[in-house]
Picture (cartoon, rainbow, N blue to C red):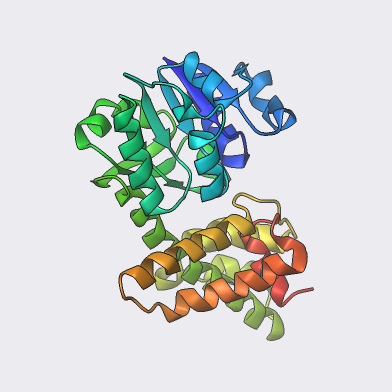
Length: 285
C-alpha cells in the first residue's frame, strides 16, 4: 500500500517502521525534517508538506502533539484539506479533542474521503513492537475494511462508535493511567522513605497492585531513565482534554483534577519533555 504519515515523533517513528516492515511504501512529513531521519534511513520517502504527502498516497495517517497541530496539518496552508481528497482514507492517531475528531470527519466527507479517529496506547515499546492498542471512532464499515492495516502496528483494535468515540475511549484510558502513575510514584516515594530495597519492592508488589506503569516505568525510574516513551507535556494535554470533556458531561473527577495539577507542576518546572515517569521528580530531586 502507499501510505502517508505525518508526524515522526517517538510513537510515529515506531509505527512507521512497522508499516515499512510490511512492505508498504511510506511517505512522511514532519515539521522538522531532521526528526524524520530515522524513518528516512529505514526506507521512507520525504514530502515537503501534508498536502504533498496526500498526493502520493492512498491512505494518510497523522500523529502529532496537540490539537492545534492537528488543526494545522488538516486545515492550514498546504494542509490535507487544501485539495480534494476523493477516495482517500485519513486516520488521525493523535490523542486529541473529541469535537475536533467530529469536525475532521465532517470535513473529510465534504472532500470525498473517509476519516477515522484512532488514538493508541502502549507507549514507545508498543509502537516499536507493533503491539499498540487502537481505539477507533468513525464509520464501522471503514474500520472493518482496514483491520489488517491496523494490525500491522497494533495487537488490539476496538471500534467504539461514530466520530469522536475513539478519542473519548482514549480519555477514559488516560484517567486510569493518571491513577496508576500516581500509585507507582507514591509507592516508590513511601518505600524509599521507609528504607526498603526498591528493586525488591518492584518485584514483590502484584495482584491488585499490578499495572502497566509499574512494570514498564518502575524499572526506568530506578535507572534514572526519564527518556520519553510518552512526553509529560502530552500527558498533561490529555488530562486537560479529559477534564474539559468531563465538564461538558457534568462530571466531577477529583482524582484526575489532582493529577492534572501535579503534572502542571512538573511541566511548569521545565520537565515537559521528560517521560511521564518523571512525575517522581516532584518528590525526588
